[in-house]
Image (cartoon, rainbow over all chains, first blue to last red; front, top):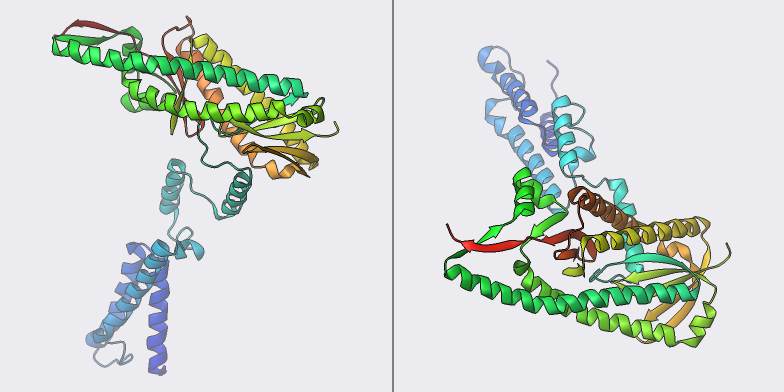
Length: 285
Length: 119
């Protein structure tokens, strides 16, 4: 029997078990390994004449288990608090544990697309780009771009948008009052023993689709009186928004220099939070 | 944050969405072309009551392409569902376009109700 210096054997076992723990293999890997270890330790008991190594004794069983636990613990901790997934870092767990796990992770990806590391950089840069544009919270009608040829068309386009939003805001303002009155009326009617009946279109949609499907729909039927508070909130928001829009628009139209400068320009109009904020003048063709 | 736009009927909503879609597609095409060329542009900016002009590369607006794409996608699907849902007649009840955090999300149509005796 070749004598291995004892500390080295112990250290080797511990290091091995810690690494194993870090990889967080499934139980089907851990149990057989521990089994082999136990058998190895039981050898001296089964064959009394054979001494393998004094540290390969059942009393030292705690060492490999401890190593495994430490490794596993570190791996979990790092994953949770530092977002470093050691098993995937070491590229193990996909190859060795076979197909089963692969299909499992695949199914997970389909459900909830994970962000690949190489995508993160791109996403970060894109976010920085977006921030640079001055998009703050993306409120009201959001952020988008329109293209016009010539200043007259720019002004026409913006004023048309302004007017249509203003119309909508005014109607909503009026209807908010009516709707809250209807709501009151309905509660009274209900207390007098009348009930609300849903008419055909709504019923049809509800019947034909399951509930979750219904919630995912882009076109939904609502009871208008249920929207009373949303109408109110919308009207409030719209007031401030229209004020700001109007201010920007007036500044723009009144500025003689700008209008002269842009007479025949090709312009990309950038709306930020629903308000035309930036005008990109394109040169050449 | 939610915001509602009110339309007088379904046809005008569809017309509105169609127009938005065309504008976005046109703007996207122009923007992409200029970004590809990395052209120099003049940027007129409205901040508070002030107007500023500076010359810069259009590439700083690269991020907009994603915003536009997202909008094009949602508006297209809204239009598609609207056309499937009510192809027969022009709906004239309450027609609302709901914006959620600046993005058009859903179309809300009023559900006609009648009062009757409770059962």
